[in-house]
Image (cartoon, rainbow, N blue to C red; front, side, top):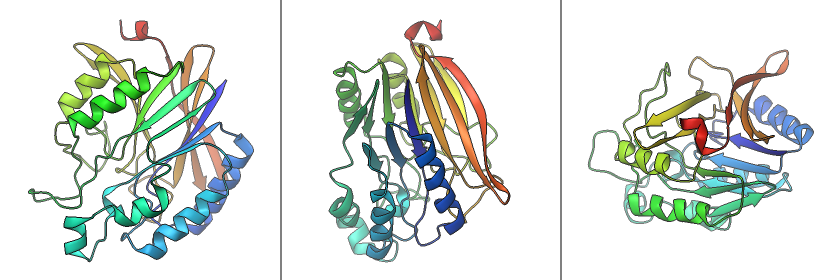
Length: 262
């Protein structure tokens, strides 16, 4: 059995202090083999916020993968956001943005965030298809049973989520993942826990979105996910932080091998 804790959108600077403390206790109790943080570590991309995120993550002594989100660029420094948008992120997390492997699972990072874009909503995601190809190859080279890619933005809008997304090249990216050996795409951004089997003409993959541990809620309580590989099945639980304590609930269970798409 391999267990992965999936966290996203902690937004240090707007973090929910009770939620992050309870989430840390839940993660410690669950004893995952790997932790994946799917972007938006910070609220405004400040150095102090990145340092707070690094301190919080340091308590977890296990393999970690950390990818940036759109909030992890300097919000108020437009020149830096255009020239070196991820300089502060890289100064603390460059060693964690690549790949994490533990147990029977591998997770490869992909950056879908941009500091600046020629579009009205610069916070929307963009997939560099060459970077995605490299991530898929990196995952395929592993002997791990469960192959995952982690990024901040979902490739498609989530069913029923209050925030709709328009990720550039999302459909082509989705087709590439579906045709590959990668079974799971881990994302954040929408602050809504979700599990969707994405069926494409050339295959399928499991799209798993994590909620937020910040005060920036969208109709859902603060939460994170636990992704479990056991006996050839992938199950996903959400752990919600309620006023009377954390509550775990199953969101879905799926076969981990390719025949699950047939």
